[in-house]
Image (tube, rainbow, N blue to C red; front, side, top):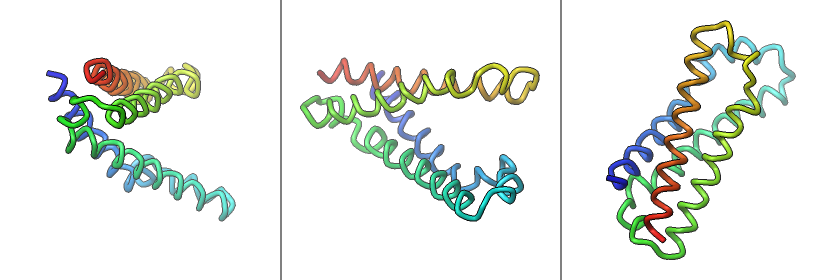
Amino acid sequence: MIAVQLRLVGAVLLLLGVAHTVLPYGLGWLREFTALTPLTRRIMHVHTGFIGLACVLGGLPPLLLTGDLLAGGRLAAALLAGECVFWGARWLCQFAAFPPSTWRGSPVRTAGHVGFALLWTWIAAVFGTALVQAT
């Protein structure tokens, strides 16, 4: 069961990473970016790209090396622990960086907040469960 969940998490992270290529367009960031200085605008584009790359690279091991991760060992434990910490921290940021004032009152933003909170919960829980099972 956890192997299937781990593969699903890997696939979702790959999709999330690829989605970062169109994120500035879909969220209307390009219009907002025009108000930024050229340096800050470039930094935003580069950071968005690297977050996407991190999602892709973080999704490949659970998608392609599921058995190796669940077989245990120091490397598998380190990778799973790192993913667990990373996505657990992302879960915490969902509540610390996005207080209710940023999404309350907008059905779309509220749905996004709840949806992403659930997504980060699921991802962190799958990596945590895999870590416990592999050690």
